[in-house]
Length: 131
Image 1: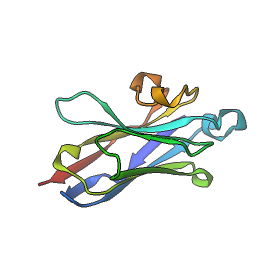
Image 2: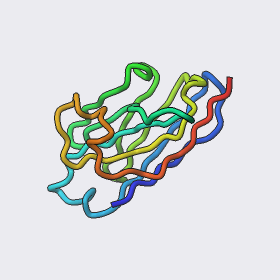
Image 3: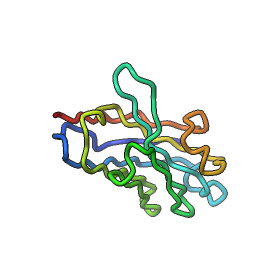
């Protein structure tokens, strides 16, 4: 099981970035495991990891942190086993390492924001938003 995040970089406030997370491994390809949730979290320097967005692969249902609603969009390309995070109108407080993660036995939508619910994590990609 592997998750590989990419797409981070330096952007000015108000700009956009698109993060990608490619998943690989049997857990992502088997039919019995297709009903999982892919999430994005971020961790700013000196702060705890926080939820950003999540999407349920089989239904496309999604959830967002209040701080990013209306600006970020999470989506998947199931054929490519990839989850995306489109980030628009970025703010300096969005500077953080962004991580993708997978929850193979997801509960109700209310649990998607809990980092402890996720089973596998990617290595993170750094996003820096300059003011």
